[in-house]
Structures are given as structure tokens and as C-alpha cells.
Image (cartoon, rainbow, N blue to C red; front, side):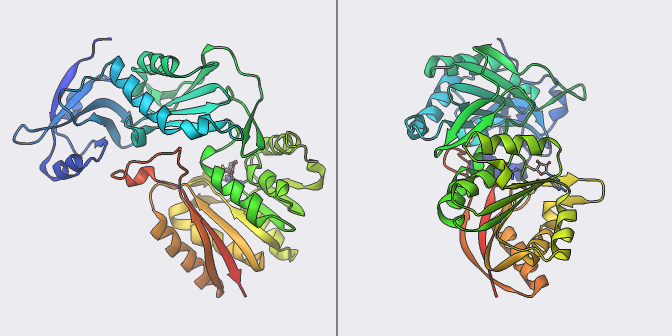
Length: 399
Ligand code: SAH
């Protein structure tokens, strides 16, 4: 497809960042961005002295207006560009492709792999492309062609995470090839997960917690009682149960979580009847647990960045310390809390300050046992801190 090229001037205060490799084109950074009308337009960025800074595409994505794709003025954004970027990403995941114990992983992680606004996940031979703007979606043909030329593809699905004329598109996510079984069973360090590639934005497992699940199973679960809050499909509960937890309790507000969690237990040969699956607001559950003087050896906290339920609005940036303080109350002495946040507005340093605040509030002491950020397949761009969103801290509650 022939693409229009538009030249834009970068405001002086943003030149340094772009030169250093900051990949996001923000509305504030460029003059006359409103002149660009068409999603997918190729944008060439220059400073005040007309020095070339980079080339990218126009695509509205939250506060972003596009992504820099190359800082080489000669590099064309054509089929061969996509081939090179996708090939490099696939080569970096060679160990994942060769690992029989793990069949679900991220193949392409947006700006971390040089194309902001696009991720590609692999599930046992099937691929899921996630498009974060209409702009990047204009390159669909090229991306699909690259992928098919580089790896064996059973089938392709896509998630459109952008609105067209204010509306999100909810249609069949299937793109081409063979349709995946529903559920599709994938493996992750020999844990099985049932995933659904055609049931909305989330497929049933968050791949970025792979190392955390393994660590819980292998090092923290044996003989322990486990409370998994914001449990979704119960992936952490299953990992804990496989690691020898005496009992797990999963708590999530969503009705679907009960059957989804039962299914994840079943596909691992575990009897879900030995575990508690509770459909409830976590904040109510905490009150109930305190009243009943329940306590757990291992408490997992993995809330969404933002959530609104009937009685509560939770915003991780503001409310995480309070959430953690409640969890501390129902954790055994020398028990462990796995505190996780995927909120991109703060980093590990601030997260640890929140942990300190929570323990200050409850008056106890603690020790940080280990910490995790994104796994290897979720490659990040050093200049784009927001992309390095995951923070997981294993905390021992001391008496
Ligand atoms: N920890 C999960 C992922 C959590 S996704 C995993 O590892 O797979 C966030 C989940 O929080 C969603 O399933 C959502 O239903 C749930 N949720 C949001 N607000 C909640 C609340 N107040 N109480 C209980 N669950 C909540």
C-alpha cells in the first residue's frame, strides 16, 4: 500500500529524548500534529534546524500519537522492514521455541522489539496479534506476511484494542489458517492452561507472570495455605496447588472466574473440590476474613491498575498501600505476600515505597525475599520506562 509521508517539527524540549531513543510520539512533542489526519501515515520527524530525528507512523493510542520506527532516514517502512523486525524478534525467542515445556510466550513486544503498538503472542502454534491503534492496523498485511514467511503458523487471531469513531470493534478475532480448538491447551513449565483465542481481549492466562508462577510452585507453595486475590482464572492457585499447597482460596468478583478456575484445575489433573473458589469483591472478603480470624501462609495480590466495583474504586497508584495493609492483617507471621502490580504509572522504586507505607500503617516489619519484573520474552525499550510495567515483590511478614 502506498503511504503518505508527512514531515513534522519536533519541539525543542523533546529533541533530546527522541535523539536518545524515546520511541513514543506524543501530542505535545510535535508541532501541527493535527495536520495529520490519516491513521498509518508515515511521519518524518525533524528538529528546528531540519536535522532528521526519526521516522514512524501516526496512530492514536492513549496519549500517544504514534511511534518512531527507525532513526535511519534511508530505511523504508516496507515489507522488508517488517520482515527484519519480526525476524529479529523471533530469533531472540529461539530458546522458547525449542522449549517443549513451555508452548505459550510472547514473540513480539511492541516498542521493545522496535514496533510500538503491536504485540504478537504464540500459543502452541497459533498466533495472536494485538493492534493498539488503527494506525498500526494499516500494516496488518505486512505483519501477517512477515510472520507466515518466518515461522510455521497453524492459525492467526487478532485483538483490536482501538476504537473506530468512538467504538470498539467486537467481531470474530479469527484472521486466517486453521481455527484453534476451544479451549486450546498450552503448557507453561509443564503447567497446563486452557486458553480461548476467540473470547474477547483476555485469553485466560497472563503470560508475563510465568516466572512468578514457577517460583510460587517450586519454592513457596509446599504445605502452605494460599489466598489468591483478583484471581481471574486462578492461574496462581493452580501453580500453588501443583507445588503442594494444602489448600488454595481464589477470590474474584467476576462470575466467570468460578468455572474458568475449575477448568484450570481440571486440565492439570487437580480436583477443584479440594479448593475454595469464591466469587466476591476482594475488599468484602478481607473484612470477612478479619472477622472470622482467617489467616494464610501465602497471600497473592495481583489487582488490576484500576477497578470499579459496586462499593469500591481501586486505583493502584493511590490505593495499593491500603490494599496491602489489609492483606498483611490476614497473613501469618513468617508468611509471604506476593505483591504484584501491572500499573505503568509507577516503577519498582515507588512500589517498594508503597510496601514500606503499608507496613508502617500496620506496624509490622518485613523482609523482601525476591522481586520480578517482566520476563525475557516481554522485551522492553530502555528509553521507554512505562513499557516496563510489571513489578512483583515477595515479602515475608516478620513478627
Ligand atoms: N491475578 C490474575 C490476573 C488478575 S486480572 C492472574 O494471574 O491471572 C484482574 C482481575 O481482578 C479480574 O479477573 C477482575 O474480575 C478482578 N477484580 C477487579 N476488581 C475486583 C474486586 N474488587 N474484587 C475481586 N476481584 C476484582
